[in-house]
Each structure stands twice: as C-alpha cells, then as structure tokens.
Length: 482
Image (cartoon, rainbow, N blue to C red):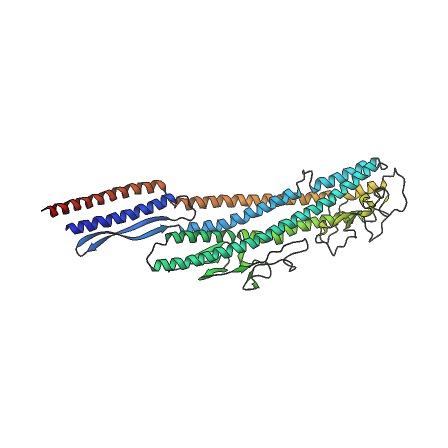
C-alpha cells in the first residue's frame, strides 16, 4: 500500500466515524422525542483497482416497526375518542347530579314531596305553602338548568367537531408537503430522516382524530386512508369543511337539518350521519355526543317534564280542573302538548296562579288551581292529592314505561351514571392496550446504553484513524528532510 493510499484510508475513516458520532449524538439527544426513529450509519468498503480505498457512508438508515406503529395509531384513535367521551359524560353527571346530590333532580323532587307532607299536616300554615311553592319551583328550575347544561355540552361537541376538522386539514396538508420535500431531497441524495420524523408526527395527529392506515409508496411518499376505506391523502390531501352552530337548542338535531355535517367539495359526505366513513377517534366521539348520547339525555329530561306536567293537570288529581286546563306545572304558561315535547324540560314552569311573585295566590295549592273561593283552611285533601299523584305509576309519552315520578327521575339519574361508568371501563381497557403498544414502540427506539457503547467504539476508531494520519504525516516529513 502506498503512503497516499494510507492517507486516503485514514481520511475516509475519519469522515465516516465523524458521521457515525453525529448520528449517535442525534439518537441520544432525541431518545425521548416523539416520532423520532433511531438512526444507524451503513458503511461499505471502497475498492480502487486492486487496492483498498478506505470506507464510505452508504446511507443513514431509520428504524421503525411499521406493524406496531400502525396498531398504536389505531389505539390512539380509540383512546382519544373514549377519553373525550368520558370527559363529556363526567361533566354531564356533575351537572345533572347523582341520587345523593342535594342539588340534583332527585333531591329537588324529594324536597317537594317532603314539603307537601309537611303542609298536609298544617294546611293553614302559609309558611308551609311557601315551602311547597319554592320546592316545586326548585324542581322546574333544576330541569331548566339541566337542559341548559345538556345543550351547552352539545355546543361544545359541535365546536370540537369544527376544531377537529381544522386540525385534520392542517395535518393532512403537512403530510402532503412533507411527501413533496422527501421526494425532492431523496432525488438529490440527501438524508431525509428528519423529514420522516416530522411526517410520522403529522400522521399521528391525523390518527388521533380519525383512525387511519398508512400506505407506503416506492418513491418514499405515503398515502392515507381511513380504516373504513375513505381516502384522505393520495398525492394531494383531501380538504374537509364544517360550519359550527353558534347556539344549539333542544329541538335542533342533525336529522332535522338544524345542525351541520362534514362537507367535501361543497357536498355532505354523508347525509345520514354527517360524518360518514370518518367515524372513530375524537371526531366520531364528538358526533356521537352531539347527535346521539346528549340527545337521548335531553329526551329523558323532556319525558320527566311531560310526566310531571301531566300528573298535575289531570282532573283526577285536581278536581277543579277539566280536560285541557292548565295545571300546577305548565309549558311556559300553556297546557301540555304531546306534539311539542322536544325541549319541554327547558320550558317547564310553575303556574303563575300560585306564584306570589306574579300576583298568584298560595291558597290554590290547598284549594285547587281553578278554585274560585277559599275552602276550609284546615282541609288537606288537595295537598294529599298532589302527594298521591307523585306515587302513581303512569306513562304519558307514547311507548313509555309506567313509573312513579320519583322512580322515573331515579332511573334517569342512575342511567346517566351507568353510561359514564361503562365508558370509563372501556377507556381503562383501551388505555391499557395503548400503554402496551406504546411500550413496544419505545422498545424499538433508542437504547441509550447501546448508543453509548457505539460511541465508545466510534471514539476508538476515530483515534486509530487519527493515529494513522499522524504516522503518515511523520513519514512524509522524514521524506522531505532527505
């Protein structure tokens, strides 16, 4: 081997080990960075004629387990959607109140029942009649408050859909741009590992909103489709549109056309559900909350309102009433209309005839709503009739189940809690699965112990090549001295 060849070999060795040190340092510094794929330098020997020409860097390889990554992304979608569901149901239960909550509907109705019992023992006491009125108004106001809370949650879900669609469009556009950058950089022979990391993070953002599958292309670019077959990215990213509704009321639903769905190229992607094949992830959870779960909760509240109004406008409960008369509870001052039930829980109110704040007379609680003259102050018959009406099992909504007033409210409160507990159980399972997949993904990532061992070998190789260079330089100097 000539002296020149020795110099060339040593220089190529220094160059290669320098590149290896750079890659190892990058691995170590990004050991905890999300989306980072471990790098390794691929080397090969150089042959010049029959003489060794040193070493060269062939490529920088990035290592990612595609199978585990795909499964973890699907787990991402399930975890995000179920976490959003639990958060919403938890807020709902806190607003509605449990069976033991003093501000809950069950407690308010129980307080009204107790007030009636107390007033029936001393019908002449105006103080006790005031308690009956206040407790009944508390029931009506709680139903109204619950309705407002449910509709607020639906508005939040609607806004979450708008936010998810915006984030989805941005992430898909990022993947499209990164595809172009990767294609261009590969063509010029540059390392694209950093771009691959950035693209992986962008796809992860998409997968949290919509469950996706990644399709790898031969040229280094990727395509994205949902697990149900909707194309999100194939060369060019799809762009979706959604308009949030500023104010949502109980009677507004997607099926009625009052709420929007996701649009593509100016047309709805699915006129039946509003979300089509984008279901799953946080986007699907928001649609389910807005159009299904919370709508069902509102329907239950409205059924409770129907039940209470019907009980107290029944002539068998108050003999001073006739069919069609307005009873103790009203629909914003009117009689119950079974053809206009949606949102009734938000409109229920105590009859103004017994409201002293509106010029009403509390004695009507004792004598009957339409009584013209005052009856005996000690007569508790009507108060007992109000009380008995609460215990009668009845169903006023077509297809409804016959229950007492307390039973219907208790069932509703228990159902809200049961749905939340069921969602938490699902979340617990999904979170455990996600943790397992995440650990498997990290296990294939950067191992700092191995990287440090590699760094020590790189250091030794660099020192050896430097020593060769030093020796060659010394030999050249001796030749120059001759």
